[in-house]
Length: 369
Image 1 (cartoon, rainbow, N blue to C red):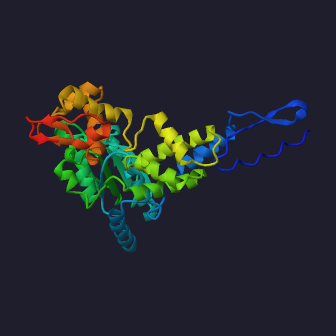
Image 2 (cartoon, one colour):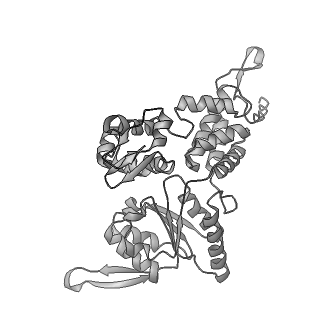
Image 3 (cartoon, rainbow, N blue to C red):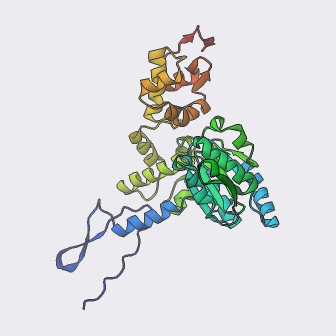
């Protein structure tokens, strides 16, 4: 038998990935532009670990996190399940991650589902009858729960029991099945669509806001450390400013900048790498993507700056109304580029300046820029 091939040491962070290939005389040669298959598995493992595991690693949202730490510590001292938790905020700000962190801090089991996946009451009953005590049960998009399931959830949240009907017709009867005390974590991007009876049953409400630049830079540095790719301070600042105040966007951009750095054989992610990468991805200095700018330009050019209704605008840009309202508009409004009025959407003076377009007078709407 031949001798086993010695294991190739891993590349240093930021180096271009070049695997060994057989050359003349049994020697190894390097071919640029190829990667080790095993390196993909390593990266996958590190990408999965970008989510923080405890409150200390969960960066940003300081006030909310401090209060939640108190509630978790109190529940652990009483050896009780944490009160039900309601998470509100735009996509990508860490609602699912925070639910996992809460379960980890409590040392409890974590169950996850989404409201659209709960089609019938028996689906919810099947989950709740199988959970263990103090389990953290996470329901994403909780505003989309069906009425029958929501009504079953009321009793489960308050009394830790399930109403179940046995039999049919005149012989039907209702029994109550006990379930272990648990913590329901409901997440939504549309708190206004959640019924008041359901909201009132949550003891803790956490409202996420877009992250500050300093928090975004800290998140990027943490993720870069996990991915083992050096990130310059200037590059981190530029990436943070272009990440829409959203950790999910920041981590996605960081991975793409890592790709650009490796192709350029750059030892680290520098500002020049980020500038070139953002230009290729058509992301500007405010973090606006091409579609964001198209939304603003359509309002300005087709509707004289607004007002324009949500459905009309959605048709004009070729997006669903929900996508427009949940993904694009929150950041545009938060950056002061767009306003919602009773008559519709209106772009602001800042949008004209950013797009370098001539301003228009909104005489009919009462807005003058």
